[in-house]
Structure formats: C-alpha cells, structure tokens
Image (cartoon, rainbow, N blue to C red; front, side):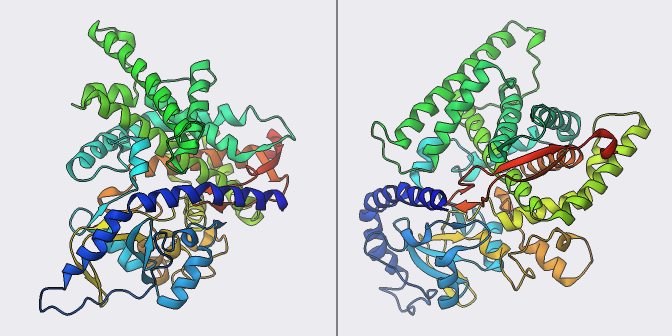
Amino acid sequence: MAAMMASITSELLFFLPFVLLALLTFYTTTVAKCHGGHRWWRGTKRKRPNLPPGATGLPFVGETFGYLRAHPATSVGRFMEQHIARYGKIYRSSLFGERTVVSADAGLNRYILQNEGRLFECSYPRSIGGILGKWSMLVLVGDPHREMRAISLNFLSSVRLRAVLLPEVERHTLLVLRAWPPSSTFSAQHEAKKFTFNLMAKNIMSMDPGEEETERLRREYITFMKGVVSAPLNMPGTPYWKALKSRAAILGVIERKMEERVEKLSRQDASVEQDDLLGWALKQSNLSKEQILDLLLSLLFAGHETSSMALALAIFFLEGCPKAVQELQEEHLGIARRQRLRGECKLSWEDYKEMVFTQCVINETLRLGNVVRFLHRKVIKDVHYKGYDIPSGWKILPVLTAVHLDSSLYEDPQRFNPWRWKSNGSSAGVAQSSSFMPYGGGTRLCAGSELAKLEMAVFLHHLVLNFRWELAEPDQAFVFPFVDFPKGLPIRVHRIAQDEEY
C-alpha cells in the first residue's frame, strides 16, 4: 500500500510543473480571452449569456490540480463526482489555463464529436504537438487531418485486416505467450506493451521482434512515452528533454528505413515489396518526408499505448471474474475444435467473427477501464445547448469516462459485467450503444479501432486456451491522468495441459 501511495504521490508531483508552466505561459493569452470573450454580449443589446454553472478555482491555476488528481481508473475521481453533484453534468471551470466547459453529458459529447470542424475543433496542449510533431494526426485539424486519416484507413482497410493483419496479430501473440515459462510470475502490463509494440513496429517499418535495432527502438520509445505525459520543461535532465532526444533518435531510425526503402525502390529491387505502412506511404501518397516521419511516429504511439493498456485491463478484470473466463474458454474451445475439423491451425476471419462473447468482454473492458478518459476540443462557433450558452474560443472537454460510468445509462456501472453487451433489443441496450465512445467518434473516430479489437480478441483466444492466471500481488489501474498499473500488474500463470485444453 505504501509503495502504491508513493507511486501516486510521485506521479502527482510529476504533473504539477506541467500545469504551472502551461498556465503561466498562457496567462497573457487567457487574460485577453477573459476580456475579449465578453464581447460575445458586450456592446450589443444581446442579453448576458447563460453559461453553465461552475467555478474558476484559484488564480492562474484554476481547478487543474483537482482535475488531474490521481484516482482509480474505474471511477471518475472525486473532482468529477463533486462537480457533477454540485453543478450537473455540464459545468464550467478553468483548466489548463483556459476557460473551459466540462461535459459528462452523453448527448453533448455526441454533439461535440458529430460537429467536428463545424462547431468544435481538436485542440490539444502545445506540448503534445511539440513532442509528437506538427503533422501528428492527434493535433492536426481540417484537410491535413483528413488526408492523414485517409492514408491510415486505407492501410487498415477490412481487406488488409483479414488478409495481412489477422495472421500477423496471431503470430505476435504466440511469440509472446510461448515465451512464458510455466508457473512463472511477471508483469502482464509489460508483456502487453511488448506485444503491441512489436506488432506495430513490424507493420509500420517491417522491424522484427527481438532484433537489436527493434529492442533499441523500444527502449527509446519508453523514454519518449514518459515525456509525452510529463511537464513540458525543456531543460537537461527533465523527462520532456529526454523525450525530445528520444524522439530525434526514433525519427532517425524511421528516416534511415525510409532512405533504404527509397534507394531500393529507385533500383526497382523486387525484394523491397514489404507490405508495411512506410512502403504504403511512399508509394500511395504525396506526403513529404516530414509528414511521413510524424505519421509513422504518431501511429506507433497510438497503436501501441492504448491497445496495450486495454489488454492489460482485460487480463485484470477477467482475473476477478471466473464466470467470464469460463464462458470465454467455452467459446474459444468451440472455435479451436472447428479449426481442427477443417484441418487448420490458424485463425480465420470467420473464427474471429464467431468470438461473440469475446467482443462483449472487450466492450466491457473499454467501458469500465476507459483508457481514453477525455478529449480536448475548442469551440469555434457560439453554441447553445440545453439552455446553456458556450462561447466561441472556450475549451470544451467531453469526458468519455463520466458517460461510461453513468448509472442512468449502465446498471451497476462499477461492476465488470460483459453480459450487459449481449444483444437483447432492449431500450437499455440501445442507450448503451449510442453512449459508448471508447474510440471517440465522428470524423476523428480512431482509425485503428478495428485493429485494436482484433488484437485483444486474438490475444484472449490463445490466453484462455493455454493459461490460467491470478494476481501475484494486489494491484489496480490508476489515472495519473494516463492509465497505469503502479506495480505493472504482476500475475502468476499456469499452463493448461493440451488434453485439458481440448
């Protein structure tokens, strides 16, 4: 317990400089907005806008410290609970140095995501763009974002998912699971991260797992990730400074790969036909070198971090729900038996489509675990919603977690219950599906959402057929505000004998 609290405290302190620096940096701009923003009604005969209720908090820092305070991942945290109880599901605050509306309202969240580019636009802190790159899909808006997203969607098309990515996902799953010694103890979170990183590195740049260059890139990426969620203090020794150096090293690897590929293409070398995103971007797009570098880096980030944490959460939730594990095993045993009758040993797309209860487990993991907690948006036109006026220029944060844990939408929302997702045609089921947005929505719906679900399903297939597991010591996911298991989710695994499996 002491170790967990120490970890939480260190993470909180880790974020304080980020908040202070960001707020002080933007203070001048914020003051201008505070004065200029009132032009929305001043100097005209229009009445004062009916802003959502709320509070601005302390001078300069607002309520940012409270909003970012660590809490269990299966909750919205004390700050959100208190503010929703006091002000309702739509309230105003001062966060990240800006006047902000926070939405825990399912309808408003959908409205925000459906009106991307018309009433709202993506608006992440500058430090995110500084480290991911100005051409990262996370920070791009408008036509540049659409172009980058189209390339990603084409690369992750349903045809490619079936023919190329399904076999790759299964191969990388088996590489990880076959390396687990029987009756061993290790970090499930680390193994999940290794699985997703190796998979993305292979499909982005044809880098094979276990090779020295791949391992070196993975180590650089760990340093890079610590900087993405750190205080943007670009001084020697800080995580942000180290991350910028790691970014340069990662881009150096990508650039070398790109130069080798271009050279082989210029020689019309038939051996260069590597079916990866790098080759796809070089041959199927008109992107500049800088754009390709940022695209590959941002997809390595998005495709690795969120998927690995979702997989770790599934392992955690299932460990506490033996009934769900049993139903999963029954489903996957049936799939394995049908494979054998066909004389096959690899999963087919039809096998994947038969993983019905597995998809229920995935949905419930994403709902309860909430890897993506909230989104950063900016209001670009005055908005009127449910009697409230939200002025142009304000930040607005759709909090996905608050909707996914809303007791008016989900019965007993803090309980892991994958059966809630079984189709029953009820009005409750319809409400759940319309309010369920783990991958965002609208024109910025995560391009890799189908790949992420495929990864989880295939990994769980082989996991439940070959292993039993339990927590080696107590651990749970916390929000710092990124989701993380403080102890790395230590588990003890026991291999299932083959005759027991079938």
